[in-house]
Image (cartoon, helix red, strand yellow):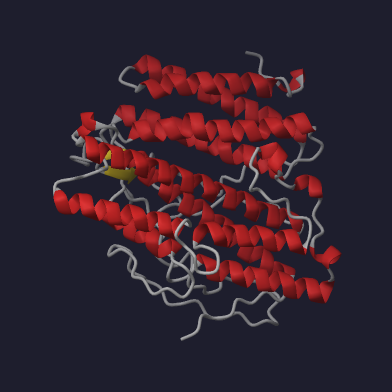
Length: 427
């Protein structure tokens, strides 16, 4: 049976699909980071030298693929900004085993291993390839009904692969441009674009018209499933190489476990999930997870401000980018990794804590005006600094906590310089 046609008959259809693409890329990125954080580190954790070297390679591959997923998020944000929409960094909480996305997309946080690799291969498979998802991902919702091209209101549509979604967006953009005219479709300000100069990312494409929009979509497809069927260096091919090496090492040593027994556990029951989720009960793990959650929230808050900025200077836009990237690399990633070395706590025997990338409500953090927006960014960053200091004083915290506090303190000072004195707290 052929894959259903994706309908893009008006701007709202396009806007809806791009929002869903942003959420999907965001959640896939979190899955890869969770698996990366879970990996053991060296022979001190029971690995042989050969196994430790393989795990080190897998960590780098996962990290590199996660960085490319961040690029995909930025490209989708550019596509949204180009058509006049505000990019979104909100998403549902994990797990999303059925219902939120098409029936074939079921998302959860798994430590690195056979199930995670099978799942990643399934998600990144080239369009038209038949592949089974991991055993734990069983669809529980029927396929979405098709969208009538005459419908004014958008709704979720069915697509089998990520490539299928983006090829539908590609055809939709071409059709809208042919009917409405390029200038009428791409109405967004060029200044709202993430550029290679600001992000220091040569592969980033600023979207200002149809050609650059199609180039951005091609970049996403090429990195994920491969260009014209050549997937060897794409995400799918790199996951397949990991799968084969992992299988060989397990064949030679069935006891080989490259990852810690990490459990995706929350600080509190997610607002958008009915089924009870595991909660962290170890006090040290809870403090570290809280810090990682605030830092992650600040990454999203800062990116939201960049893509919805008003009269920021080029210097200020560069600072927003630097804060977002710096927090992700020097705070979220070290804290997320350190968390997996801590016990999840009573009720979770034998399991270590895992960062669940917790979202509370939409976590949109959109503030329309520049001065209050920067004041709130500074205020929240200062909260992170204070909580890092408190967690370090409480005892038992990993060294990553102190380091995170130092990074956050530097960013807090940089943000403070752009807040009007009248809006700063008294102390």
